[in-house]
Length: 327
Image (cartoon, rainbow, N blue to C red; front, side, top):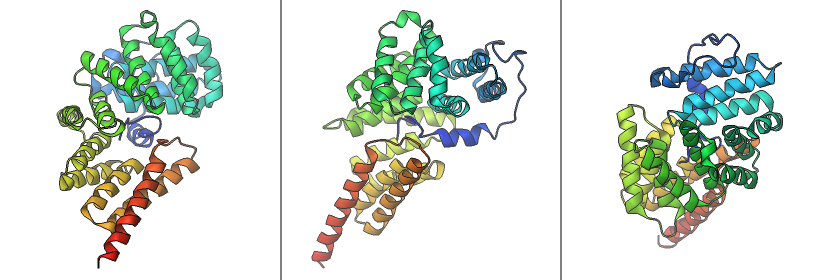
């Protein structure tokens, strides 16, 4: 799941895709401005983003110019509502400057330009400073007139992410609804709203969740590019509504695309429901191993996932003991 991307969920996938693209020279002359490529066809946007990031790294001795290239990259993906690409850019910014150094420069620009405050919020999120990220985004959304329409679109996306990490799911849901009103074919917004409705509400609203999940699947198929997060959300809802075999197929396909710990966990839950205890144990263990590896690498996994996995293992032990006692 989900929330694709949230902080690091899709970063490794985007790195793999992005650096497989041919490198392009910096065509702006200075590495700072150039013609805005936001009007370019979607098929060329990855190239333009990579070009800007390469240019940014070449300007490390002149950090203001480098930051302007990162800003251009953010604006490119803002027009296409690409959560994964935005995560990739911020990860690059962090690797280029370190979070604290980047924040010094970003905060300087944020005083006069709310768009930079949005980037600052993402950096605070990477520092696990969720409270500050929330405060920054609430200040930004409280003054929407300071943002251009395409910048407001990016701000809404970031705010939803921040609220999800802060576990303020009502606020996140309202923002995703606002995004969907403006952009009905936003796959990530539909998928993330379905995820919240199915997994974060008590009780879950599975009927509404299914509606948004099916819309996300429809958009995914129209784009002719499978998405692990969308398949995971669809599988989770299928698992909750008794369609276990369909759920397993979606989870396994999602894992082929992106072996994320939450997908392994969801597959383990369905295997437990089917009574396949050995396979459930393998899935839960894979989830724990990947989570441990993420922590070792300094990544910030979904904070609620580890206790959920532990609870799944506990349920598995109880089910195994019950099954053994009846043999």
